[in-house]
Image (cartoon, rainbow, N blue to C red; front, side):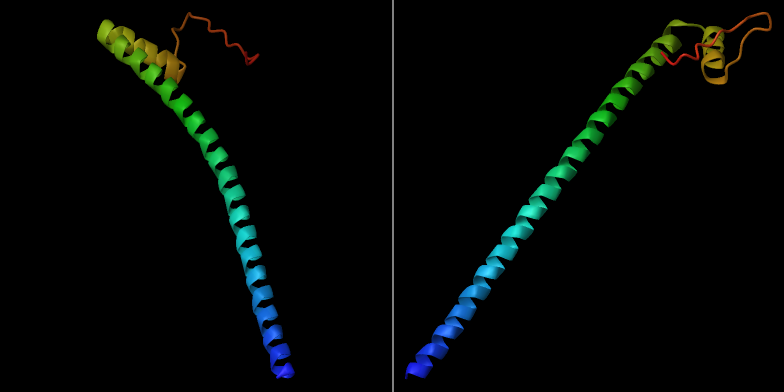
Amino acid sequence: MQRENNTLKKKRSFVSGFFKLAVVCVAVYVAFSLVSLQIELADKQKTLAKLEEQKQELMISNEEKKELIEKSDQDEFVEQIAREYFGFAYPDEQIYIDISGS
């Protein structure tokens, strides 16, 4: 009888210890997952902010181009596109480029 009680206590102790270990492992996994998700969320929010800024810049640029198309004639529009995108200039015109980066 005494032997059975000791064996039963050992089994219960083992099951209890195993259960505690399993709970601790799950808690550590959940904590690690939460931290990694928070880091990923912060990174995605930064990316979103950058993309929103780019979107705003593109929308402003598109509005300027729409206004240019609506308000100007074809020659002025072609001239501006040639200057901005292709770097063209008149033969007797001098163009100065600011290379300071500011």
